[in-house]
Length: 538
Image (cartoon, rainbow, N blue to C red; front, side, top):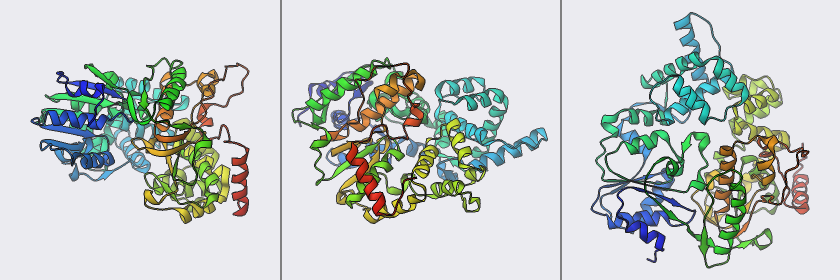
């Protein structure tokens, strides 16, 4: 196996614990496995970011003789060690469960009838998630202050929290207590927190070395678990792929003070494209005052531009948002090509009970609404305002979808299913969002037009924090680094010069609106397909 000098330096290092900042496609997994091979006498735990990556790693492991290496997700590890199988588990706390706990608590403790508004329930739900992902222990004002700093709260929700700090702590304690006592379903983040708090178990796992993959997207509680272990640690990730701060992820590569190595050569695409991407993104990373991207590629030439896409061969469409993806779907589906969705079609909020419920809310057919939270709203306008206040992007995506296509959403869904295939190998077009494409690669990529551009970045009316703006650039980077041979890049609008008279729509809105049509032809084709299928634009 031919290794780069950067890889060889890591594999042969005398450092016991260290971190690796590795660009997309730079062979980080190979590097870690080669390091493990050289240290095969050690008992090694390889922490994969999720189940799919765990499965992929186990396949690669077949080529290595590493009898003492175990691959697991940190949640699987906690699940078994803390015996979480004794709990009834849920992916997400239900709103009506939170409401019942709060109303019962207030009646029991304060002898008052109290019915929390939807925004407050959403706040408490988010606060539970934050606590379980933090390394903080005490449930006090320090926790709330930390939450405010790390959360992108809207003005209304922040005001609500400031007025109800004592009450919020009481309700948080009650919900956590109910989960611990198995009176309600526990979340997966909850048993991970329990694992962290139980130092007798979590501090004594009996490993010599822990390899931590995707270290830019792990939570503080995960870092706490790893740092409390009495063994060697290697963190590996890509700072430019940090795209999960909305889940309270922390970039361990920045937080942990250890000797650092870099992997800057991508084996995925040509050096010509690597330098183009480096130059374009660095001109914007400079604005957000972050570290600059350093990336090179292989000697092959990666073609840049829509004119180089071979539409007779499979290609992948990557969008920033699910609404951006549906716009691309309506454009491409007229070709009657076989289509596939990364993560499965049902994982996208195109047609599910939430979509149906919001549709019926707009139609004022409230008796057909099946989602409890949506039943609390009188109109779709009320729901939209709630979604803006609580920054619920899923709801905003769905509302934009319904407002744009009306009852044609059923016909669109029907047409999609007519061309849907279950095996990616059979697909002509693969559709995905950036977050679902992470860790994957494709021969040909078309980026949708709903990514951030310089105009949105520098226009002060958008009021983007550096943290949020930087993450949006990272999202662009992740999408742009999925391509191997050919890519149509989303326009970063690098020639834009700020003008205070610009009437730029806020970025929160622009994410769900097509900023720039590919060209006049794309609009014509979309309209043609809608007409042929008796679909009128709403």
